[in-house]
Image (cartoon, rainbow, N blue to C red):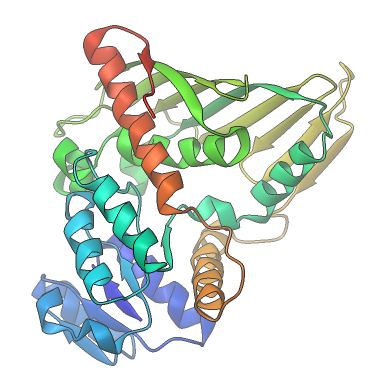
Length: 332
């Protein structure tokens, strides 16, 4: 496996593939210190300063963890070498060149997936399964709130990609993309979107720390997405409202209600007894196993490039909505 980029997310992938016990890893990282640090901490086969130094034909899979504005050229190099890949989210920072990459991947029937780790979470898979089984009747409405004190978790945020919109940072392209992936996976193709966004608190960035988004889907489902990245409580709630009941995902706790009773009809905490950060890292190992299973011909429900293209289109349309003060119809 070739891990391209050894920053924060690259480190998680390196740990994840190492934890599987199935992978031999090499790393591409232009920063000398990070590259040396990875070589010291992990049993790497090779390390490269640039992708041009690596023989791409000698690898089974590339994992692209570099900043989002480099994703398209890196994917293009993988495609030219017939090298399957996983690319981190967002797919890119604009729509320019995205369709060309999708067409080339399709023409070569190349395995390509996008790193939305929530898809491997047991609680989200159970939620989606319950909705498909009509546990809450027909899904009609979705409320999402994913807000936290971002600097607490990424104290270096001002010096990373996050601070710059052209590198894929901000509440919409970066944080909301996970929620958009959940919506696309569960509710289908979005039809139109409206948005308000701003940088209300966080200093030292050129990106928004807050967004309020409304989305309508071709399925008739409506969704409301709220994110701020400065509040003290860590809130991560998604409520799915159907004609016969509600399902709420509160962090890792799945709650089912089918009446106005004070006690839910059913509650299960999928993280019960687990250490949260260890469980989060374990998802990267699960994701790595899914990718290696897919290399061996197994099924893979991880986000496709087409899913991520929709996701990016939704994020860019959200920004366009507030910039132009209008509802944006998504053009397919």
